[in-house]
Length: 269
Image (cartoon, rainbow, N blue to C red; front, side, top):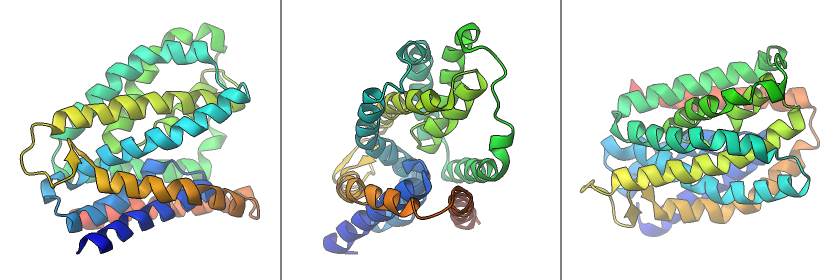
């Protein structure tokens, strides 16, 4: 594939990711990782590095989209910053550990973990909100937050997502109201993306068989192409979503996640 076709592929990935993110409310990484897993081999990425680079690049793209999200939530006073401060130590350690683990996993295990994670998230979109109910008073459960941040950020760094998809339901379960849970998890997602992508940059710096224009396990042409188009198309997807019932959107999200999981499992076998 020549350089122009490759650039078009990454920009198209950003278009699809942006529209689906806006239309279905799906975390960017859940869209970007499987699309990059398809496109990166055409950029000359060795098979053993495809999933690792897809995850590292996905986390790097999330940094840019998360900044605008955090700004909007902060302006609306939806971020509980004391909760973010409590989560931060766990996020820092978990993100770096997750990146270190992800960079060492074989291709088979990376695809298997992502596929299973996507299936679990698909099931959650269908029935999960019936289970996620507040069970504790938030002010009495803050001691849990650093541990929660550590576990969920490690998982997020391994599969290449910002973390809001996981942290939001947990914060609700710990007693934080839904609107503030979304804003707080968005702020945490920014830190997960920053530290997670840094981890993939560091662990990939010693690899000798990465393609040109790579910084560690982050592939710059893919990063720039996805950012350039996803920022423009996400508002289009969000506008499209206003014409559909929430139940339709949830079904669409579940189907998209199952397709992403299917792509991974087919690639394995």
